[in-house]
Image 1 (cartoon, rainbow, N blue to C red):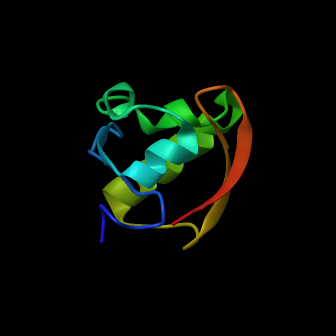
Image 2 (spheres, rainbow, N blue to C red):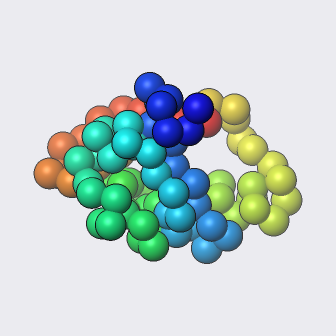
Length: 88
């Protein structure tokens, strides 16, 4: 499912660094796998949204709380284009 999914899937470690990304995730963002692995997930967010994203990540990591099941986030691709993605 992970490899052949039509949905972009990324897995981050407890520090928020990418440890796995599937082909669709790479296509959406325009990066190669070696450019993303080990990088913090905030790399794909506009700088003005990183604080909120980090707080949500910490809340989930330490308390298991999620503000919403699905959230629309503005993201930035490798060429600087901005897109709206539904993240869950």
